[in-house]
Amino acid sequence: MVTVPFDPVAPTTAAVYRVVSAGEPAFVKVLRRPHVPDEFKDVVGDFPWRDEVEFLLSDFVLPPGMRRPRVLRVDDFGDRIALWLEDVRCADVEWDLPRFRRAALALGRWAGRRYGGGPGRALRVLYEGMLVRDAFLRPHCSALAERMPGLLARLEALPQANGHNDACPQNLLVPLDDPESFVVIDVTWQCPNPVGADLGQLLVGLAQAGPMAVTDLPPVREAIIDAYLEGLRLEHRDVSREQVVLGCDGTLAVRSAFHSEPELAEYLVERAMAL
Image (cartoon, rainbow, N blue to C red; front, top):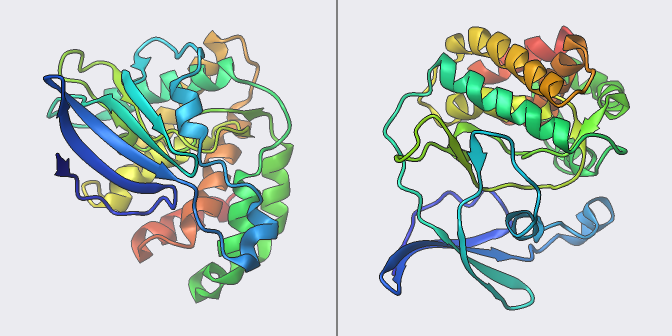
């Protein structure tokens, strides 16, 4: 068994390992019920730490070009769960514009297949918890911070869809045996979010991690918005480009504008202030 180094951003991830079981390599992810400080309990409520397991075991049919990793075994210990998953062999390929388009098209179809319902808790929890307490202290974000309550209300008034909810390229693995497709991992917060929300993390994931320059984001943004809209239409959902733009840029403002490095934060604030 080999411990996999990881940056413990998600409070629900306790550890990850690579193991060989019955001659087959497996990726083991240990989920845990997170500790929520007393001052956040009223905001967070019952944290949905089991959502990833329930998604992996569900019968929801992903759109063409996407699949789940195979689930080999699940060990449920009550407050912890060990997920034994297929250890996906990934292709060493670039995230070029066609790949971004394919991902956005599939995410649009995903949203179209789980479309409707009232707004979920995810953005509200983030706003009322971490953002209100800490992030608004950043001076260059003060104008956006003042607009945030109204922006959040506009996001909640959009059509809602339950998608991946952390669809950065790092969570859309490109398998070696089918490099035109994606294996979706680290699905989170399985509740409705604004239509277009999944495009945010798809857009900025590589820029946040470092491999992609912020100056390369604008053409990617335009391409993935168009592809996502096409995916929605393939699922017979009538959503306007303006609604998807608001969902993408507005959700990014809540999730990332106040926490990113200065160059990316400046870009995200500029996009949000134009809404």
